[in-house]
Length: 296
Image 1 (tube, helix red, strand yellow):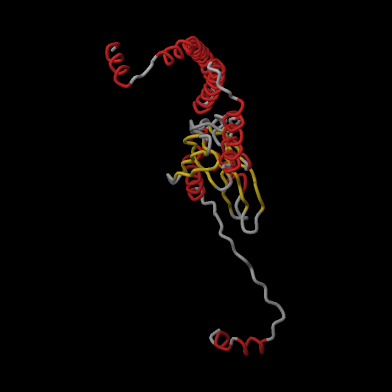
Image 2 (cartoon, rainbow, N blue to C red):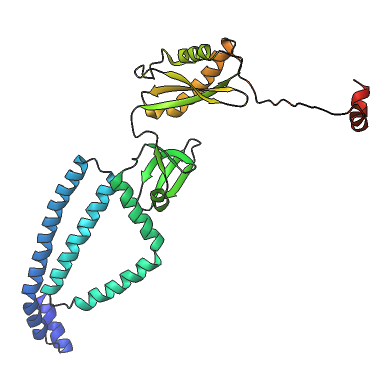
């Protein structure tokens, strides 16, 4: 290697002395910069271990843990790069000014994305729902598959994937159907006015009386929810043990309620109207409905 350098020096008349001297002058700064980087790397690994362990104990989502880990990494290594640049004699003030201008331009161009990211962080911290929960967002009801910084993925009952922007979620009403283990179901059905309300209540209570999926304390109830135009609307109130069973249980119990009322001979009416006709002359009827009157 040395012989090759000597031959090149003779051939091209190159003097390596200034380069070697400059390298010797820069060597302490280079070594100190590398040492600074290694120290910050050790600090980052230690702080990351403590951070991740604490967030997992606090039951934070994996997305939020990853976000905080990245923020810690960017912070630590940004400081490390600035200190290394100072060790090497690089002017960082002009560089910071340029980066600040670029950051403002990017922020203005991506306002909606930034708003979604901030909303995603709010959702991950406040945790109105978690992955696996069944939630209702405006007119969408679905299971939360994934919470990212930009959007939340919902899977509807029809197996459709909905990519819901986080900004809209923060601004809308959130109904979490599986936040609590036990929830109360309200299942309505109507009976005719001529039917006995106490008898119908007893019939409907028996539908869930011995079903292990429901709590017996509080006991199931059947209440009169509404005195409607064509029916007495009853409502079965029952506490479900596992909130994740809500949808299939509602479908099943609604069918059983109809079958139980049919078996008990209790009529479920359909809407109807009564029309009263008064003070109509026979001549007027004969003029406007001659065929109907003649056939009467």
